Image (cartoon, rainbow, N blue to C red):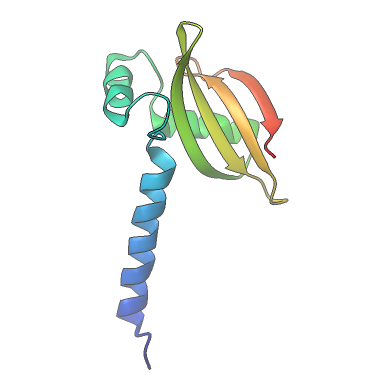
Length: 108
C-alpha cells in the first residue's frame, strides 16, 4: 500500500504546519509584521493571537482562516476571517487591545 500510516501522518503534519503559518502570520502586503505584533503583545499594547482568536470565535463560531493586524486611525485593529458552519466567510474587526467587536460583515 502506497500510503502507509506513518507517511500519512507526516503529510498531515506538514499540511497543518503550512496552515498555521498562513493563518497566524499577517499578510505581507499590508498591516503590521509578525515581529511587531509579538513585540506589541509582549508589552501589553495588544492581545495575543490566542486571546484574539478566542474573542473572535465568541462573536462568530467557526474556523479561523486568517488574522491580520493593522493600525487604523491611530489604534491597532485585528481583522479576522472566519469560516462558519454554513461555509460562509465572515470578516470581523476587533480592537486589538480590548478585543471589542468593532465590525462584522459577511465576506464576498
